[in-house]
Image 1 (cartoon, helix red, strand yellow):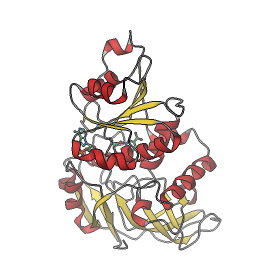
Image 2 (cartoon, rainbow, N blue to C red):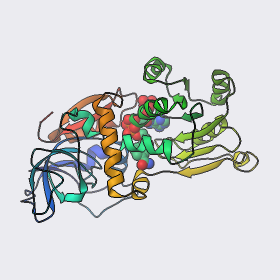
Image 3 (cartoon, protein in one colour):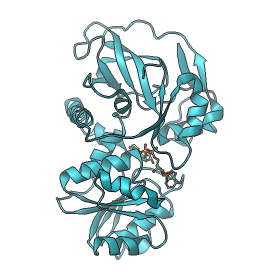
Length: 329
Ligand SMILES: NC(=O)c1ccc[n+]([C@@H]2O[C@H](COP(=O)([O-])OP(=O)(O)OC[C@H]3O[C@@H](n4cnc5c(N)ncnc54)[C@H](OP(=O)(O)O)[C@@H]3O)[C@@H](O)[C@H]2O)c1
């Protein structure tokens, strides 16, 4: 079977290759085997290939934080899924044609789910959800500001915030995205830059903003901080700039602002397995009814992993890059 391997850390399209490896075999007791239908290439996967991600396993290694699959066989004692079920996998190493995993690691999802959307259900939707529920207690009418607002996470934040009555200021890198974000439910959109806080103040009528969601880091964090009121919280959850977040000292001291961090794994680890399953069941329902979607720019076969990786690193994409290891979407 085919599987993506990286033999060294470096430029993703240089270090990743599609290799032939042994089959995963039949499931043992408590195990599940599934065929991988599709996986997205996320920023964390790019960092993983570069060797800059928090996890840096021994090589060769297989990337892939998420995927959607179809169960082909289950071992003795597995009752919550059966052959034919669609599943997402809580474990990594998903850039391959088949996985054999512990039964508890797969979560069944509705069979009618769009397969492209299902491939992107595991990470970004719960991230957007927990960014809105776990950082600051927001009430309907409260404002938050986020950068990378046109990313998959950013779009999901807009939708989920709108459903809760929270108002969003959305920071992006080009004005041509404003109309699309407004259609999703954005209240205000602005282009990032040195005067972003003045623009935000003008467009919100100076409304106090309590939460800033930052996935760019570097000086972009300081610019989000300049949009927040006293006592506001910046939550850093990514670094598209590759830098560490910069917070102005005055915002922390006299402004009483706080800089905190978020990672999905920690957010889910605070919850029981049944709560985690319930989160995915609820997000699955919202994907099914079309409330939550993430656009896709192109789908590649696994043999073209190098081209797919190069494409995923281009700016100004209209959506995610997906890979279909068995050619089933
Ligand atoms: N902490 C967690 O648990 C967690 C979980 C999921 C995702 N994340 C993070 O969330 C962020 C978004 O992920 P995603 O999958 O939603 O991304 P995505 O859909 O692949 O979109 C990438 C976004 O990053 C922007 N971008 C790229 N390079 C940039 C730069 N140098 N400066 C500013 N913006 C830049 C792009 O803007 P353009 O369109 O202008 O190019 C686009 O909005 C990433 O940082 C990711 O690591 C974190």
